[in-house]
Length: 288
Length: 306
Image 1 (spheres, rainbow over the protein chains, first blue to last red):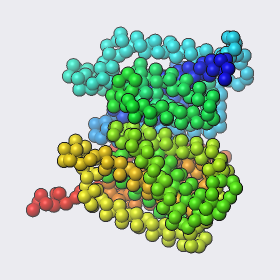
Image 2: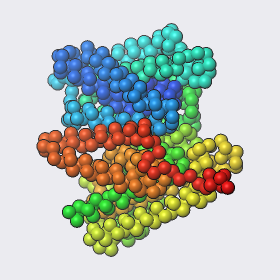
Image 3: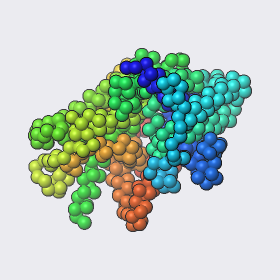
Image 4: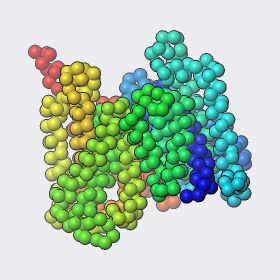
């Protein structure tokens, strides 16, 4: 193994880890606050990616300028589903939310397939000249992904630390009962959790499509590594989710030195199972 | 038409075995399993490898009888369930849901990439049907096994063991306080349910005669079985049977309808069907969460009235 190959894989790992992190923040907070594993999160990523495609093809925008449309689309879908379906199930039988979200994942994917079909798509065709830094090759899309993720993580950090809404979100995620007795408006925090989770998922979806391609199943296939990242970092811990995403992303890429790349999901799964055995509360001590 | 009816009923019977198995896990015990297709695939491959004639392309075949293959399929699926249950059964059931999805995906990846097991994507052909190649005979085999599974699960449901499972589902802490080994009961229910899923996989392999990893898309099958159980009534074995047949009629009927669309829209048609079933699931969850048949409560209420 050469050092250059290793470094190159490390860079790819950080890139795919960034995408995982953006998805895992939402999964972790929703799991922490609403107490269920949201299986339709990957499909919110797909919704975001395809909304951006609509803006790129319909309005002729460059893909980065189409990101607000992606966020808007995914947020409207997520809040709409929460208010029409999840909200009612929350009150009666929370555990049913898991089944409902699984069904919702299938339905969202079906809608995308009906509108856009099942063929692979890209935002823009043609070869883009990569940047070279020493022996490491970096596509322009990768630079956008890294910069965009850094920006969003900083924004999430400021939001969680400085705004009262962000503090309420962390409080509810840490201890729902304690948060409620301090007079936090739970429904309002829940809606904003969906806004944030779906918005980040939409950007993750666009980034994923920039890195690879668009397909109705693209988001669903990210579910396993995203759950692994959220569990690794600790459920309900947004910073843990970021850390978990980066670790899973890097581990998946480095595993290709020894394993067939087809087994990347198995690597994420193995890390998750190992974590569930030795430390189910995750690295940052989240909820079980 | 008659051939289609036999085909329809055989698959409905296999789905019914799966719905009954899921009822043991989710309906009675409250355990999520989103990886039904994984246990199903392990069962199908085990049966295929054991009962086909020797082939240089894949592991085996060993030319063993049908029942040996079916038994081994149950054992193989059970071992897989035991391994994953051991890790996740002590945690919230959400983790089991996530882990089973992972297992199903990894099972599919293994069968796709490890060509020495099942010849990769080219699959295993020539899986014989027991007794006779006549599909009507095989329908009889499926019907007999379905009846056996139903009777066994119905007996288990009424047994003290089944009562403990429901007690754990309703109130884990109280069951623990009553001195029940909650983790052990859960693990038993999960493993037994998965073994029946393995059995269903072996039936499928013998029925179709050819299996490849593409037959085990982790999603559609798993999703359909969940809808069947929820629609029929979770916790009720008769409900699981009814739901399996009812949803299979809806599913096949919708194929009939979308089949009339122009051929260019055929990929869209399957998506339309999934969307309809997905919406049906939400409607049931919101307005009739108990399903068609309510769970039969044990004799408690009757004794109270006396």
